[in-house]
Amino acid sequence: MILIGTGRIWADDSAKSATIYYSAAPWDGAAYDIHIPLKKTPDAADPAISVNIWGNPEFDKPTTIRFTGKEDSSGGPGAGSGRAMFQSVRGNSWPENLSGSISFKSLKHDQTVVATYELTTAKGRKFKGSIKAKWGNKPTDARGG
Image (cartoon, rainbow, N blue to C red; front, top):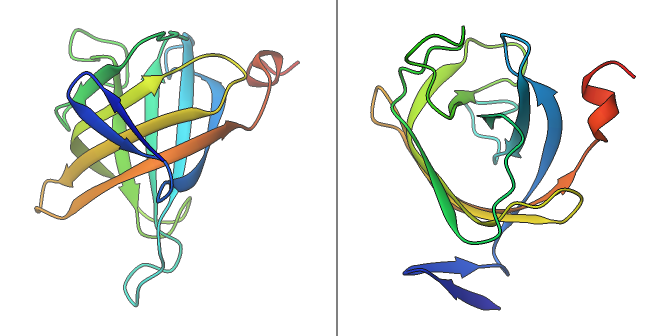
């Protein structure tokens, strides 16, 4: 199935499975975390992209969030709308900041989230694809309840 939305093509059939979580921004604000597992390679045993979106926005129509790769995770003036990172071994390797964008078809609580992404490391490694993300927790889980 291909969905057309505001000049962007959404390819659902080839989308990677991902998980979206309610979370908290590093400065204790609301946030979402999206975990996108990637295919293993000889130099990446458990590779993944993590996308953090500050706040708990809902988008009823296609929306794009852009990343510079230099977002300030302490909530300062350079915080932006979130950040994106790549790890070659999820949770055990130093995260590499990513620049680029993620475009959501929509983002609604408790509904599958469909998005496309185009992200690049500072060294020029590119990641491009689409995801279908299911919710991995409820809002109270992110606050420890």
